[in-house]
Length: 259
Image (cartoon, rainbow, N blue to C red; front, side, top):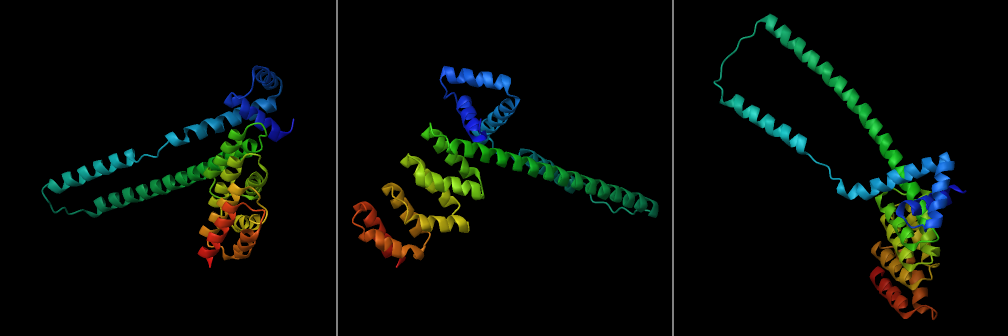
């Protein structure tokens, strides 16, 4: 079975979208195919992480407790009687040795922390790759428009879209049978409009897009982006007799705003 089809099937299985007969086939597949079982476990973990993501919030409680404790210690020391203390050379040597030990310990801590940060970056990269895989599997699911919507929504969590993601979103915007999915794909692309390949694709799509709802949203987006390069195309749309009046009106309003 093709990898993407298997991913889509397993996601439906995890979400409980399969009927009893289909679910039974997947049960049997998971028992017989170790690769399918491994992929199932990975997808289930990623989907669970995505569902829990909104419940996770970073906290500075430990840091705050430390700062409060530190402030209390400073205030305690300030209340003590001030005394002049004269250190002997021997005492200074001990102090210097102590400071050096602390410095060495600090360097060791920093190196360990750096290694841990590198491991965290690697783990985050793995999570991003898994998130992308889930998105790609959902967005091509031909049986469920709601799941394709969820796939598009997953892309909102990605800071920078690679070519594969961009192409998938443009394909959804052009070809998905659901207007809602096409609009969601356009909204996702708008998030990445600062990327040159996305910006150019949006400008070119104005002459190709035929869905009136998407046309209106696309015109509004390009006008908000202040893309004067689309004025000629907007003029053509405003004169096209086959274009709906609402789209022509939006095109004309866009010309006025960009001129």
